[in-house]
Structure formats: structure tokens, C-alpha cells
Amino acid sequence: MAKQPSSSSVQRQLRVGELIRRTLSDVLNRAEVHDPDLNRMSITVGEVRVSNDLKIATAYVMPLGGGDVQTAIAALKRNKGELRHKVSQQLTLKFSPDLRFLPDETFDRLDDTRRMFADERVQRDLAAGDDDAETDQD
Image 1: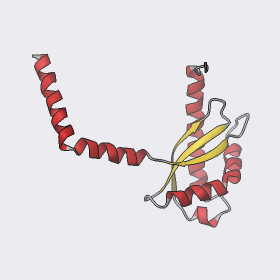
Image 2: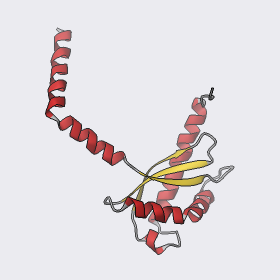
Image 3: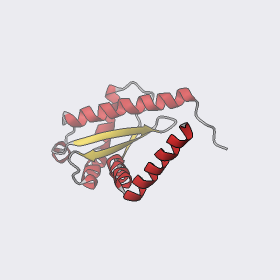
Image 4: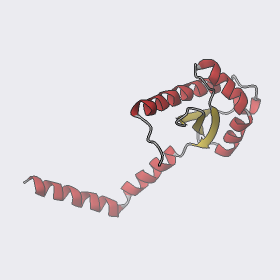
């Protein structure tokens, strides 16, 4: 059975993930990577999740304006070593985490949720739930 991480180790993962996210964002904003293709892109780093041992950092990215996410990820993967080096220069960690890049689907999920709440059946169910809550309070 897998051991559950303690709350302090989870807090550390979150803290390290946020530090990596900010550092990656800064490096990409300042075009510090020696790849003109990557430097021409504006990439948003929405979130970075770090493994329990802090050796793997998965960055969820999206080109600004919803450009071609696969091209952006390919450029990031091509420059993974240099990005890792830049991150490790900024952070004081025992190990420099291996960087992985995936599309940030947060906005897609938000759009799906918005569409779901706009559906008339869902609106009707929500209104019925409000009526039930008011009846319970009386």
C-alpha cells in the first residue's frame, strides 16, 4: 500500500511548484532561451505540479491567445535542458527537477462548465434546488 504524503511535504510540493512556475514564466518572458522560435512565442505557464520526491516538475502551458499548443510544447521540449538549467540557477534545491510540458486545459474545462450551466435543463434543476432550499427554511 502506498504511503500518503504528509501535509508538510504536500505544502513543500505546492511551494516548489509555484516557484518553478514563476521562474519558468520569467525565463520565457525575458526570452532567455537561445531558440528564436521559442522566443517568438508568448507562453503562459498556468501551473507546475511537482512529484513527491521533487525530481519531476510537470508544467501546464498554453500559448497566449490560444495559439498552436503542440508547436509550443515541442519548442519547450527541445529546450528542456536549457530551461532546466535556468530554473536550477534561480532555485536552491538538492536536485534540479526534470521538466515535462503538457497543455493547460483549465480554460477548456471552464468553457465546458460555463456551457453546462447555460443549458436550460441545468438552469431548471438549479431553480428547483433553490425552491427546495427556500421551502426547507420556512
